[in-house]
Length: 456
Image (cartoon, rainbow, N blue to C red; front, side, top):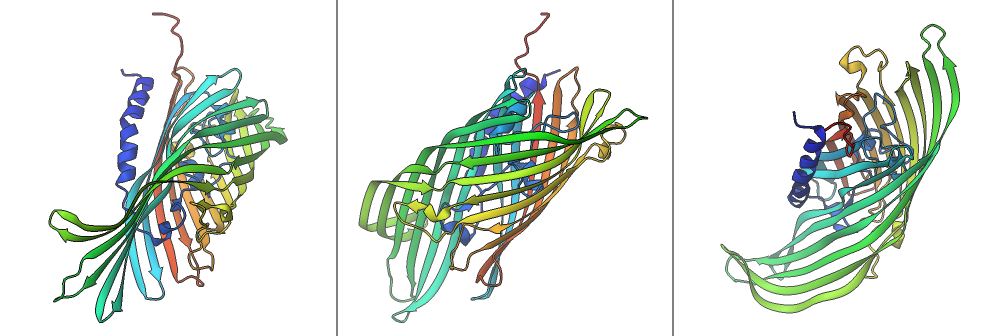
């Protein structure tokens, strides 16, 4: 029978090109992505999404009933890795825009990759782990049409945008008893293409159409770090069953340094006509290629706390429940695109999340071993298109479904994680608001790799 190690390796190589293909074909259409670097994905991991976005003080994979995933939101958790883990996440997103003036509604649906990652325990005895992978950071995708009367004719203006930022990351995590630290570094890269097309709509007089296009490619190195510290706050032993219940508090913090991306920009102003073969250029008003510049991204900080309970039975430790809270903030007023500010504001998020497993110690019944998760997030979005700010709310639910529970004799651990999110951006003070529903699912496949054979 094919080993899980071989299967994971082949899956990793197979899904590597798929990640980019799916990302390039995502069909989002939201005017909010017109500003900054578009739609920012604050916490892409499925486990964190189902718990309101928790990541700073969350850790998994350390107990018998909890699957091992890669919490790249806090690289300090890489020190918990005890099996090589392949982690893949995908998202189905549905959004509805509501406009007050003019009155209207628009719905879009799209399918995007969330992440592709691999975690490796470099030294299990010294609790040293490494993780690396790919994930989208932001998305730009919109097409907006407006109409006006100019000199007795109808003028159509179409605003279009595409692109976004992706990230390759690699990080290390180290654990010393109750304290652990880690860092992520890597490469951010992407593009931002903005087009403004104008056309006079006249039945008798022909007009050339115009297009103002700006294409920007950017890239740069980033650095983030995290820490966690855990301590016991209570312990009791059942005199009959000899089960030991213990309660822990885990503190966590993360931060990402301010970053400068190197960018090159091509500006093109032209007239054209539309044919069956596509757009045909008539004349170029301006063509300025390879304009050097920078994009300034702000620093981000986050801190959280988790209270969780474990039960030890016959030497095996089980995670019973955990309750966490977290706060994060980003100084988007320092964002600059070619030294120009945008319609952005400082953002913040407050999150609550819970995880519960009904009865993992008995081993009876599949649903007694499922991890049930829920959470809530409230905050202020970084976009500020109308000057009134955008409030952001999100409620989430999810399941951690054990596909293959961990067994000491084969060292394999497989979990299917799901998250369902209901969110809203904007309120009564905003002309345009956005409601969204996201369903995310991910596979965490773990196995013992690089284990020298005792017999051949």
